[in-house]
Image (cartoon, rainbow, N blue to C red; front, side, top):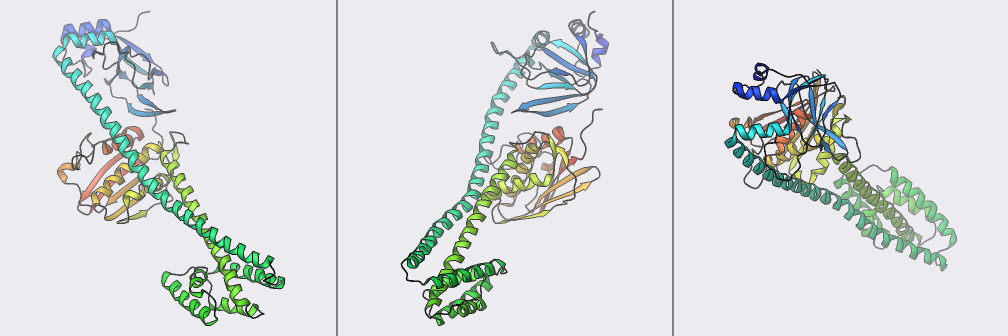
Length: 477
């Protein structure tokens, strides 16, 4: 049984063919046919030989690209007459096998008008020779330009994120290194005291008293409330005066250690009361000082290494390397990890305000792609403020959508440019500072990839990008 055909009049209802002559429509009707594809079936597969040109007659289709181990949906449409498949069969790439650049799946029962790639290529070259020359030059030029710009953009983005992450990692790593060096010195001092004990210079009964006193003081220090910088300075003066009065050697060096540990004059008096033998107070104070400083240094190392682990976790969350491409997510997790990754670029001059609605439900999304959206918008906001201002990130629910608002206090976007910010290659930055791809990519991720919306509202001192994401999966129509 032969495949069903379309008449020339039926072909003329497709916008691609509406201006063709009767003879041209008759040729297409003779060489093409109608194909039916059931819901859920794969129509074309990325990487397979591109041997057919498709026009959608009815139904809903989705295009997807393979990224690593995941399929990422790029387009979803039910518009009659849209075309896909061997759309560039007219380009003469001699000796180069043409392959489908994406996969296409029918979401509903769908009908297509199909031409072979050979017939479509011949038709285009024979009927529109001048247009084909122009299209070939434009296509090949755009292909090489896009490849160069995209590669450069990826390298710049990776370099910026890597520099920021390395800067953030360097601080806790340096702190851990410093604390480790100081801890080595304190442990050496404690070994010296142990040597004195082994040599019999400290009586055994003194050791029992010192150990008991040391445990009491450390427990007291662990429960002490945190002090402000001014309170700590006052406490150091008080402790230093007390130690000087009681002839503790190096008392002014020990005072900050005791103050940082939250100990006060009352604690020193307790130590003095428990030290019975004359001359033991100085040794007791130093012994407890070593113990306190060792505890503080170990806490510093724990905090620093914990910060490194937190940064690594944020980097993993940002990249989503160990997660599925599509999942139900809490948008705040991606926003927080993006802020961590851009911490160095945001700098100290920009105040970050988070107005999160933590009660928001999860949304179905591609988290790594949304992180790219947050990165592009936040990066633009920081650049607009020139390193000084307020970055406000707010989340809230609006009907059946979750809305993420990212605002800055920069000069704003002029009214005549607001409608163009999502255009490919459009940028308001100086030459060399932007590619004009960030917001275009963000728009396609949010609108085409997630079925949401992204809008810009701007006036001087208040520019906001509103990203709206649906709470439900997009259903087939």
